[in-house]
Image (cartoon, rainbow, N blue to C red; front, side, top):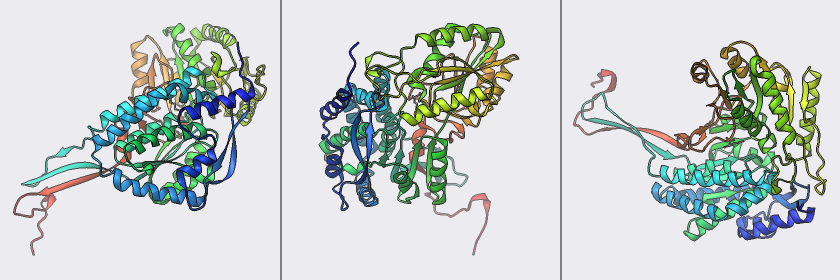
Length: 522
Ligand code: UN1
């Protein structure tokens, strides 16, 4: 198979950026976009492709002055945008969805180059953006509030939903563009404007996405500050967390990051939407369709090289089928193709060298705690892509109580855990971690399935039956409990997070009766 050389990966990234209408250098983007008083950012961060380690660009970090300048643009844009009727805002989101359809191949490929996702998953990420646009367009005519019957005569009560103002979005490298769209498209139809700080590891896809959205705004004569973007690392992220002008901060990433952001925002009584770490498990009971269970496990655990927050990290298997599941999984893992994500392999690289080291150290500590490595577990050299960060997906027989198993390692390591009793025991093991994002059970036994879904069952935000832990559709609310942060994004009524509820009571009579029958006559 043809392998792209180092220079070719970088060249391809620049060709794709140009195809989507972005200027060749990020500095030019910064200058063109912001023209802030302080100029085009500072402290450039080298952006490299995990495919081969090639430098793709130098991304300038925003200065505080850049940020303040942008925030002022957002506030000015809010005055215009929030006045537009919601269905008209939906029309702009519809156009963004169409522009994303047009650029699906290019943006999907850029996601692969910058984040290391395999082609299918890069395209899937852009499809997820398109889907949320469609969803948001429909929602723009359905921002419903309730009406209530007043206890007082000739009174009417109802509630309505108003936009919050400026919504801040902090996104992670592993879904470098889809998570922005979940937040920004819903926030936008609700009447908010958004300011986005993507991961410093994936600024190029963010710039490309920003261009696509900005062009739609410009074509419609709308201010650029409706969707603002700035680049940088942790320091730049704290600016919006501490900024009372940012009404809601939606942050996706590690629990450590979420705790810091959550505390900073709570300190100023702002709102947060946190989507943090997961430690997701699949339970396989004796009645499970093992063929389906194994396929779902492989996609969940090795897909995206284990770098989804919904990745399957633990497999809790009943003793009766344990050996069968183990043997099948090991056999499938040996067939996984690892290599260039653009060339049809199933497992691409980890994001960077630090991720490889975390993978290695987690494997070492799991084994030191008594775990038994069954397959994989080594760094993989890929010919022609020496600077890339490839590893072999690993399976380790382990106990749920191991410190290593209790933590989320953003890498393809699956812990295999045996249970002997009923479904209650499996669920108890599953819930016995600090995180609570996604969970699944494979069973053909209705009682087991319903127990798993009951309030005594899975304690996660997502609980699936005969479907893996990852790859949720946008139509449901996405997020989790406990240290996952409690936020819900994407479908269902997650839009309410981006609005403030106002209760209105109207008296159309001639008297002034007090609630609770209180009399206060002077
Ligand atoms: C994430 O990894 O941060 O359910 C999001 C999924 C995707 C989203 C993952 N739709 O796996």
